[in-house]
Structures are given as structure tokens and as C-alpha cells.
Length: 244
Length: 243
Image 1: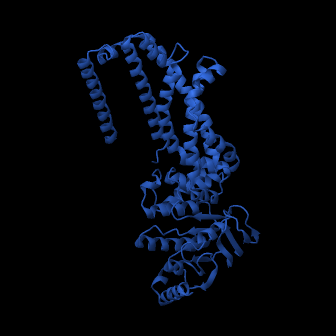
Image 2: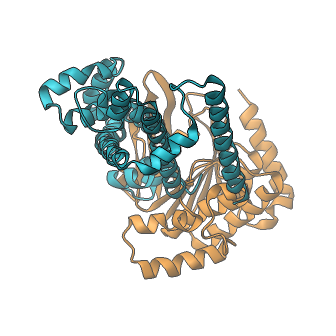
Image 3: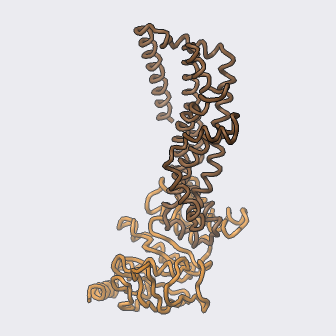
């Protein structure tokens, strides 16, 4: 417990230092393109529209994560089975290296300019990140664990339930944490085009209107969004992987 | 009775075992010894029904072994315990897989933990335990399903010399109490002579039977200090060294 307390202190000090540096930079530069952090934070609290854009963005990210995880998890896990592996591996192998972000125009053409195309774009990218990690982790599970549980009379289902899934959990959690960074980055891109909602839209819009305070408020909120999701995944990890 | 007949095992082109034939009577203890990489562990996994022999067959009480043996428990050297399960859950796993009801399970596991000196560690994870304790958990888990055959792959190799001797005594006591058939793979000559009434010596890869040493005197804690014990160890050492 002491260690985590020290961690919180560390986070707080870092956060305050960053804000302080920002303050000094904006003072020295005295340029409207770098507003004062106090003004930005005040704006963040006072403007209602920021909240609704944040809610839209948060939902998009959550849907994408849920969609990607629910497809990538089984695809990765069951790659241990030859049948699945021969079907899934070539797909992953061929499609993974392609920069999926270029699919946005295509998705918009097919799925329309609504939320769906954006959620699908983020989910596509996350799918590969999670599936590749899960697949590698599932394949690396030591045969000895499997022998051990088979000798206790386990069925195939038991092997997955008691060995494969718990064994890959830490790797999946790592993949999720990495995915959150990616998700937020892709979110910005997906929201910067042909939409009027979300933090990405707000950043681009206030940028073009030269409303720099709002732009910074949106950027800071986006960073906060990523941070909060990250903290949530970490606390889930502590619960799920208690044994680590 | 376990009867291993002409068992040969290939891993792709690599021949691991070559025509191994021997028998272990019900309730007997048998040690399998040989240089590392001679296929001892493979042989054990074949007896357990987890690996299939390329040629030959294994029969237990007259029935051919084609799938993991329900009457046998396997203890592996390092990877037996699941690090993501607590001591209690590890020990209870075999019972749960067999669909034993919770009440019976609780009673039985409590008894076992007591017997194995693990009370107070029910909720600990394997990495929090010492090597000797981990080994006791692994043995407790195997015993929980009341196996007729206990198959062990170098179960004590990761222990220091003192706890090793203690665990050998413990295994001996357990074997006498439960009357299980015991097959133990080891690379320690002393361990083989102390625990195996029958000792099977394998050659280097591909593993063939080099000799079968009868060791009827085994089965007593004091055997370790007797003249015959040292003589047997010497004999075994000569057999292993001989080319």
C-alpha cells in the first residue's frame, strides 16, 4: 500500500510540474496560441458543450474497445486450435501490416458519416493489436500446464477455463493498456473529419475558429480521457491478475 | 498393474524412446533413472495417457491406455502448480474437474492441507511459497483425487538436499499409507534406490532399457543408513556408467 501511496504523490508532483511549466511557457511566449492553463481549466469547468462532446467521444472509445476485445479475444485464444489457426493466422498476417487508418474514407462511404464508421475504424485497429498479442500469448502457454491439468481429468473446455485464459490474462491487460493510447489517437483522427461531435471535432473546429482556449480545453480533456481509461484498466488488472 | 510393451516414440524424426518394455505390479514402487534427455519424462507422459506412443502400447490392469488415465495422478517437476490459483484452488482442482460437490470438497481439502502442513496458506499463491511447500501442494493436489497410480517426474529436483530427504521420507510414508502404485522418474541415484522397489535404468537417447534392478529392501526410512543401500547405489552407478 505504501508503494501506491508514493505513486500517487509522484503523479501529483508530476502533474503540478507540468502545469507549472505550461504556465511559465505561456507567460514567456505571451502568444494567444498558448493560453494560460488556469484560463483553460476554468473554461473546462464552465462550458457545458465540452461535456457533451466528451460523452460522445467516451462512448465511441468504449464501444470500439468492447467490439475489438470481444472479437480479438476468442480469435487469439482459439489460435491454439489448428483449425482456427489456419483460418485466422493468414488473415492477421496479411492484414496486420496495412495502415488501417486509411480505411476511414472507405468506412464512411460504406457505413455512413455517423458513429458506426468511426467506431469500426478504431475497433479495426484495436482488433489487430489485441488479437496478435493474445494469439502469441496463448501459443506460449507451457505444455506442462496442459499436461498437468489433463492428468487431473480436464476436458478441453476446462483447459481453456483453468489454464489458457488465466495464463494469457496479463498479456491481454497489457494489450488493452497499449490499445487505449492507440484508441485515443485514432479517435482524434476519426472525429476530425465529416462530423460535428466529439473531442476531435471540437479540437479541429476551435482551431479553425482560432478559439485556442477551447482547443486546449478539448486537448486536455482528451488526455484526461486516456488517463482515466488507463487507470480503469490498471485497477481491473489488479483484480483479475491478483496472483502476479 | 501397469504394463509397458515395446513403446517407441518419435518426435518428428527424433527417436526419443526405443522399444521400452516393463511391468509395474499394483502397489509396487518403480523408479526410472537415466541421463537427461533419455526420454524418461516422455515415458511417464505416455504411461499417463497424455502422449501417444508411436509404436507399442501401455496397458493398465489389462486395458489399453488411449486417453489421460482417470486413475492416475501426475506430478511434474516445476510446472505442476498453476500460479494463478491459490493453494486451496490448486489442491481442489482435480475434485472440481470431477464434479465433486462443494461440501465434500471442503472437508477433504481441509484434511489434506492439514496433513501436508499447509493450514494458513489456503489463500496464498504458489509464488509466495517455498520450494518444499510448493512441492507439498503439488503432491496434495495429486493425492486429492485418490489415484491408484502416482506418476512423478523429478518431483524433488528443485529442492535443496535437506528438504529433499524430508520429502523422500514423506513420499515413502504416503506410498505405504495409500498403497498406490508409484512410478518415479529421477536423475538421482540415491532417490531411485531409496524409493524404488524396482529400478529401471534407461540408456541415452533414444531411451532403451539398459537394466532392471530389483531393490526389494526399499520401503523403510532407515534403509538410507544400511549397508545394502550403499551397495545398491554403487551397483546402480556402475550400471549407469557402463557402456
